[in-house]
Amino acid sequence: MAIASFDEALEAVLGFEGGYVNHPFDPGGATKFGITRAALKRARGRDVAIAEVMALTRHEAAVIYREHYWHAVRADELPAGIDLAVFDTAVNSGPARAVRLLQQAAGVTVDGRIGPVTLAAVEAQVPHLLIERYCAARLGFLERLRHFHVFGRGWRRRVERVEERAKRLATQADVGPGTIPSHPARKGSDMSDTKSIFTSRTVWANAVGMAAILLSLFGVETDGVDTGALTDALLQIVAGVSFVASTVFRVMATNRLER
Image 1: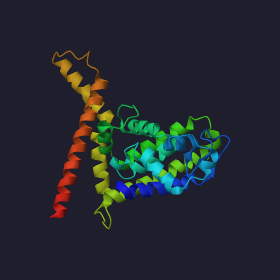
Image 2: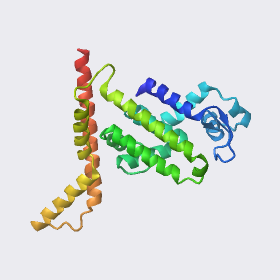
Image 3: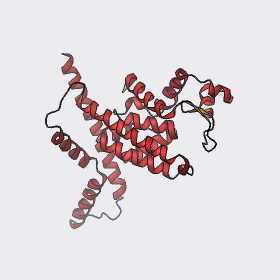
Image 4: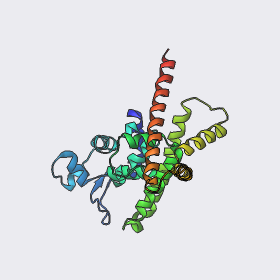
């Protein structure tokens, strides 16, 4: 994802946020480039006046976004498209909320801290499907906020545009610059279907249930087994293996290209 991804994501966010505003119903209060007075205070390490918010430069806003939002959700380690969706949510609703929604969409423990398990689970997903689930979860969260009746239309439009742009970035990353995939519809469908099967909680839950039934037929006691926890553990193992495998394949591919 690196610098180019941050620059593109920043342009998208600034396109939504605009300049200085101080809406009476906005709990963030005085805001410029999407940076609230409270966020500017945290970044500078001291109290700030409204006049300082009004005088905030685009350059400083970019620095704050990179240090306190982009890095906070480890966007450099997220797949293309997903990095934009999570970053934009972090700006709009806070980094912790953005991570919780990502964990919810990826099917891992929701604790607001993005670590190896969350990153592996995200890497194992089909990007377009994860983006759809993530944006749906984000919109569901926004709809429960008490000011949705005031800002809801704009929030909904923002989520829809981010989803569209995120999917486009994910597609560009899959295809690569200047590359036209052969039989794109069938190839993409086959890969997505296969990946979805192996990362589906329903599939693993059914597999665990069937295994428990078979074991009970052979006299093995399974009543004390927590099938939900076992299913989650298997999903995390699959996500971890998928992450390691994809990393190895990428390294091998890079080495071949460099020869």
